[in-house]
Image (cartoon, rainbow, N blue to C red):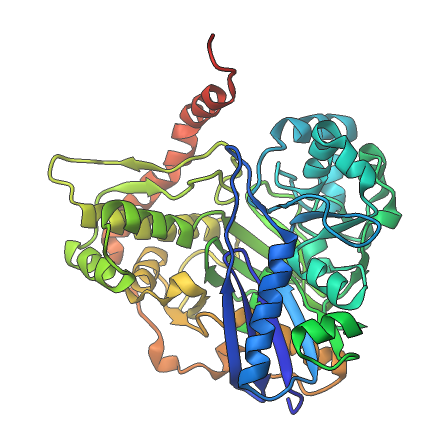
Length: 495
């Protein structure tokens, strides 16, 4: 691709920006973000913080590299942002990891019934935008009354402030509980139940068209010329999937960042599954099936800080490698779970402690927990389960760990191919820009990676095979405990 593309991934933990020309990164920057958790089950971020991080990341790229000719934005999906009549946020955004709307989800489902799940192609959970909107109407009605525009996802907010266009890509819209996935339109029965006028929702785009041009004011902030074309690419899952495997169907891939999951693009149209999400694919074609772990890298960071304080990632991996495979079974769900089970009350757990259990073994158990969970997600997808000699591409910051990659290969019993560990979503956004401009589409990361980096399952796979079914049973076995803990936390304090 001859055009220089500024690609931006507005994620949960950071806003990443890079200028790509041909297949090369000629400038890059990253600005960290923090998540606010004002109460149990709550997860919020400031939309203003997204914009500030966006400006800082883009300006750094502009000073270090050549000027871009187009901007493509992807990022976290399913965030609920309320804007007033001036386009400013009314309150912090409710993130995809926010599960406060449990009761509101139940009442909403009682009103609408199972046709809701059939229409949207997904079983809604408390983090769905629909449930969060009902929570807002019951707990912060004045904020909802002041709302003139409902933005869904961090890319939508950045596009809105940069161009004035109020849009949402179809991949992101699929996660909200508001989209008729077959018709690719907002589903009127759920809007009626919520009392939300469709005019407040964004215009739907396919993630591969020019959605606006950079306004003069934002252009000055960013250090860029006004009028630059801007593409709202597919949300991060869609962009990362396209960046990893391109248009290949039924090729499972793993992404491990703060959260994580296993995804595949398919032409099949499966019915709603509570442990999987179905999304419209990039360019509005096919479906992306994904099983999402709410805590992947977040769980590993917690385990490293807790069990091996003072150790960096490299030293922690060295100690865990020396410990060898464990017979500990850990659930990585620090704040609810989406897959391989859908349970907002799920929490982390460790089974199998002994008097001789070491901190290094506990840390390794966290690595193994991620791999076991991915195996259980794969079992839900016929195209991803079972013996297969094709390597599974793996991306994301947490996937930089060589030990974790080997454990995943051993637990899944399949080769693992490390691919563009932290650039998959950026490549996907670049591909979207090429499609929008009618230019040749760059190769996916999987097409260009060095195949000598493939990790084969080792002899330790037999150890993990023996424990995999026991790990899968923990979710159901501990569900009553999770419910009891959640009930205790929500109960009013005793006088």
